[in-house]
Length: 338
Ligand SMILES: *[C@@H]1O[C@H](CO)[C@@H](O)[C@H](O)[C@H]1NC(C)=O
Ligand SMILES: *[C@@H]1O[C@H](CO)[C@@H](O)[C@H](O)[C@H]1NC(C)=O
Ligand SMILES: *[C@@H]1O[C@H](CO)[C@@H](O)[C@H](O)[C@H]1NC(C)=O
Ligand SMILES: *[C@@H]1O[C@H](CO)[C@@H](O)[C@H](O)[C@H]1NC(C)=O
Image 1: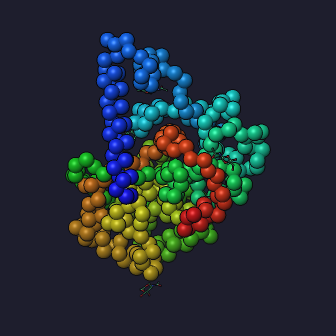
Image 2: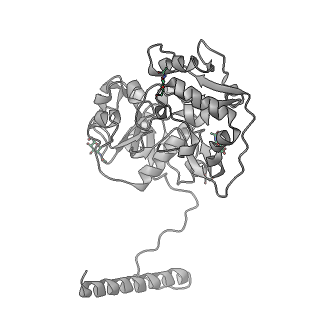
């Protein structure tokens, strides 16, 4: 910027400030003055009956067609509220529509038909991994925003995250009487994780919970699993950023401090992993070190659909960019992102 334009922007700033000061002055004194016509009209006083909500978000379907009780985003996330509804009668007036992938993956007939209201934004919402997301190609060039567990989504909705603690906390690790647990709901004998488990089992006993294995009632998850020193957080498929409640909710990179977990890729084979787990089992000090991060962070793992909807509310209010998501299928299936 040259000297002259610096000067003129200072001048402009000064004039603006003078104008703002005058208007503020006028505002504060307006009750006593009858002057008018100089400043822009005053904003209406905070109205007692609140006007219509400024942003309406239509849930085209409830996720997996299962209704949930909606919560108030100002209470849940401390953001200004949105009007969130699953009533399709709002479609022509909705500012945004959230379409949950599974429920619209059967074909375009399960999506809204007819002309799209101008300015309406469609949000593609999916928390499943690419291997469990049929017909991704159908989603290309239809959406304006993405909402998923991938960190490069427009609206990032992970299964959990860490929040720094205001002041360092004390860590108390519950007493551990057992060694290794794994919970599995889909037992696929050909899957990588079952093979790995079978290898590991040769060197180390692993308790398996879930279908056709030890019973694990929902309410008993934490009391049972916290008895174990180690928990195998094997995902059903390996994809970029795909870390589900298996880790966020049960067991407790990019998202976790490196001293918080043991990654199987750091071991050449299951027998070396077993050796490491046994060594940690004997060495209380090194075992405890895996919990040191808890002095600095707390885990948010009880994320509800409402949390996701309210994140969408916040994001849709903050940005209003005009945009189309081009090849959604390529992006979501890739490991490198856009
Ligand atoms: C949400 O909660 C806030 C604060 O409690 C309240 O002012 C607001 O009216 C509530 N909004 C809705 C839609 O219930
Ligand atoms: C596992 O890896 C270690 C170290 O590379 C090797 O010595 C060992 O033989 C391997 N064990 C098996 C069962 O492959
Ligand atoms: C999630 O956990 C937080 C903090 O522990 C708690 O305040 C909140 O009520 C929980 N939310 C749900 C939906 O369980
Ligand atoms: C959203 O994407 C659609 C499909 O490409 C496009 O027609 C529409 O103009 C976009 N709208 C906004 C608000 O970006």
